[in-house]
Amino acid sequence: MTIKIDSADLRLLERSEARAFRVERGGAFNAIFDVTEDQALDGQAVKFDTPFKYKGDWIALRAGCFGDTAGKRVGVWIDHEGALEVASTDDALEVMIDDDGVQFRLDLGSCKLGPVVARLCQSDNRSSMSVGSDILEEHKETIAGERVRVVTRAKLKEISLCKEGAAGENAYAFVVDKTVTPKPVAGTRSATMKAAQILHRVSRTVRRLKAQAVETYGDAKPAKRRPMTVSESNRLQSEQNERLIARTRAMHFF
Image 1 (tube, rainbow, N blue to C red):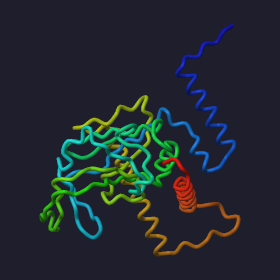
Image 2: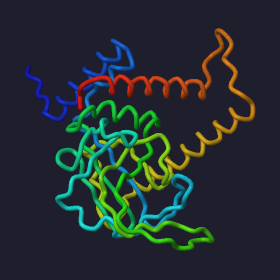
Image 3: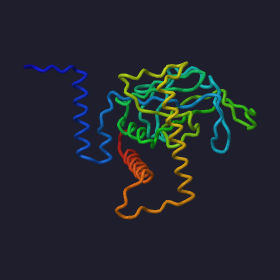
Image 4: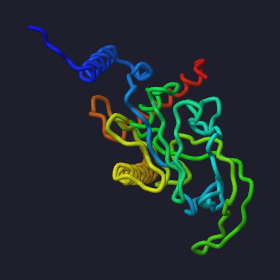
């Protein structure tokens, strides 16, 4: 008897076997060899007309400040470092700009180090977003009692994955299965996008509370043989990811 397996199920089986092999082999750097062909990074890089603190000043990007970005190159960087560019609008990045903000989709299967980017985001180590731009025109306004630099014209150069973006809960990224999750659409925010923002907000709050607890009560080293706490596990994961980024910088992918 011949057993027929359709192509979609066959690809899923192949990916599962590949992942199982890498898990068996172990090691944090195996993330580089993970399969991300059906994955993408969706999110919002900034929300317009919403002030946020940046280098001691309050700043807000006005809707329309980036003008028409069609045909203009925008990169995807890590930590605002040009040497760590993983993609751009020339290849794996799509940018959707409307009056509310800047949404994006990064095709992880087509960008450099897609598996590393996926790992950094999923582990909540680099799930915040930020924008890098050349400010061309701005003025000061008083908003909610604060003097705010309002940017009315700027050139968008890059969007970055980072630990804590200045725009806070309004700039975030999350990994999706692009075969079932529609691309972000200008003029609307999908239920998936809204849910991701809520999770991002909760995650930021938890990290802040943990940091406050460490500052107040200290962070004593765990006793031998004691089970690892969630906080210790998160810190270990963060340290592994930092080493992963350090190794990435030392390699010649760029």
